[in-house]
Image 1 (cartoon, rainbow, N blue to C red):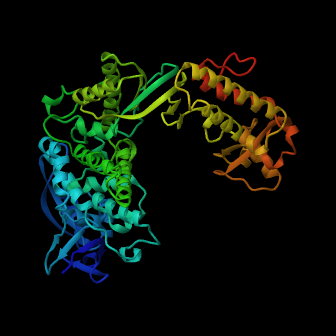
Image 2 (image 1 turned 180 degrees about the vertical axis):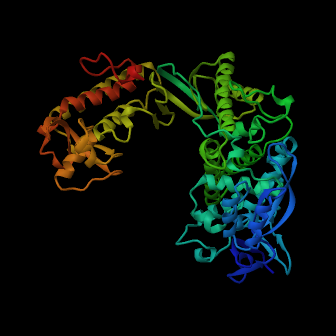
Image 3 (image 1 turned 135 degrees about the vertical axis):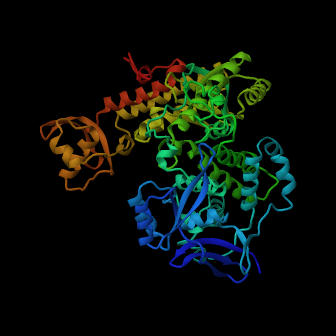
Length: 632
């Protein structure tokens, strides 16, 4: 019989029903398992009143041993099996102290039987066996790419090997409906659905529709714990009794304001996932109970990390990270491959990146994944790594200009110096540093998380500047980008001076057009989303912010405006309305350019431009004592 693909598992009144797709017949095949019963765990020994309640719902109990995540010790527990999955919630609500009552029975079945959704299996009379392995033509290259991982971290290698073999199985040619997918789906999205199902242990219908990355990570973690016979901790146990709270984030080192030529930006590849992997950060390894590990401190905190065992979260996230960085990312840029293969590899790399990006965030706030000590340790190592990379670069004679979370801006470094820094960081910090961008010219204001960089091909990168904020009027955005365009050919100080003169002319022309009314009102329009009830604001507020001034006028004109909607308005000369002074009008109610508050727009334009171009020795406007950059 040809291999069949596991699509879904459903809980039935008389057990579980496995749903496979048979490509040879283009049909669905159902395989029942009437022996398996949904279950959860209670303490052992079981109190008499608990036993009575379980028996009233025809539940069965037996004593089993599960390994505790934090201590690694075997613990006797009462396994409670029920006929009806809904009885689990009925019992757990009344019995309180229970474990794994929130694991969906279908997923629990897959975890317990080590089944991967979307994977091919041979179905026998009384057995289901995997029909997947690493394709023979890829095996030598796979072993070469991951040889170092296999020698250094065999547990991580085993997981990489498992996921790799799953990801390289064919995707069946079937209608979406047969696979449990609602509506149409592109070939690329079908590929991603199967890949996610295989990696995260999710049914195909769920993998094709789920957008919650925390659900994916939770399923991966639970599958791993069940395979290792480790009891899935309750959320409060995972948090070690601590409440979820705000965690100190990444480090930003203030920029050296000014104009810099030949700036190279290096960044840590997948910083937080790499820290989790390199420093063995996991739920059970941070603040482990071994006295001999207490000296292995997390920099700048009271936490310590276990030196005796490999952390489960470190294995999971490390395997995903290595699979992305060592395989799918290089594959997506391999010119020897057909474009279709490169596209799929790029899609796979994006999917893995999505999971990796969330790997820190879920430890901060997501129930069942949050642990404050783990989250604090991840960001603490992040801050430490940036500081150390800055120190190492300076020690090597390089000139760091700016540091932000996972990136360093280097001033005019040689290629050899950059490569030496990359090697040194790998040796000292166990992290991969790589060149991210090369700017022929880079402008750094005093404000952090804001800069302009012109790539060597003339493409501008603009980050965090007021002029390009989404609610800035088009006038500001257009003028700003015209000014930036004048920098695209700049390579030295002489060319910069010529560009500055062109920028001055561009700004003067824009202000002249504004004062002469030669601009469409749409270029002056602000667009802002309402976060409060505009009617209540209009009735009760003594002073109204400009978006609500706009909303009140729209309501009075008979138009409906509600929370969450965007309002569009133009700044006008102050006027009295409802006994208050208003300074904006809805764009649709502006009668002509004569109502526009031109001076306000000139000030806004100049303020936005000065934030960016002041480091170039430029200041626009006749009486500018202070500008936005002075406050940042």
